[in-house]
Image 1 (cartoon, rainbow, N blue to C red):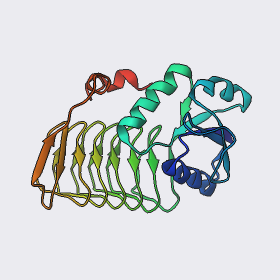
Image 2: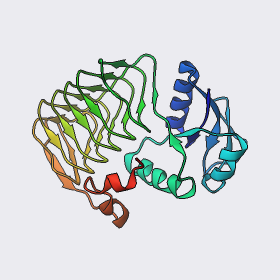
Image 3: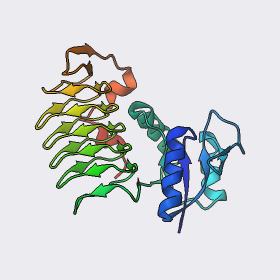
Length: 233
């Protein structure tokens, strides 16, 4: 059984720890968190160090892999970048709750987390480091690009494309065949009946407000054209 760490000891990290305990596929040796004290117990598991100590932790606990326990896409992206700087050879683990429903031939790549009750339908494609939260549903032939997410209760119809680092927030619904651009946020409980471009904040029932989002240099440089240069092969 592989020894793993969870990076991030907040609520999202707790949910991942719960999945790990239920699947019994990995041995969770601890949390890594740079903002909470060592030895603090979170969900029956202790924080064993911070980002800077990660290489030593890998050696000490004979760590085989790590899961990024951060729900926010852009923060998770930064965390990935910081982790590979200090531990470039670390394996990123994917976890799937046993109650999730996956169609045949659906592949869950590295770093992606599928929470309780999530549904992934036929021929849907999931990118790396995605999050499908509790009871989220992804329709047939839809695509989630790397570092994108569906919040709890989000419903995405068939043939939808969700761009790099984009979020479909709590209980939002996206209609058939639409495109959501990169770094775009669809607000909670919104109804999406038309495609939304990149770097937007859109909300309403149906969508009636669309605002521009400004990104810092780090995020601008990591758009969908060069994200693959960052993600390990």
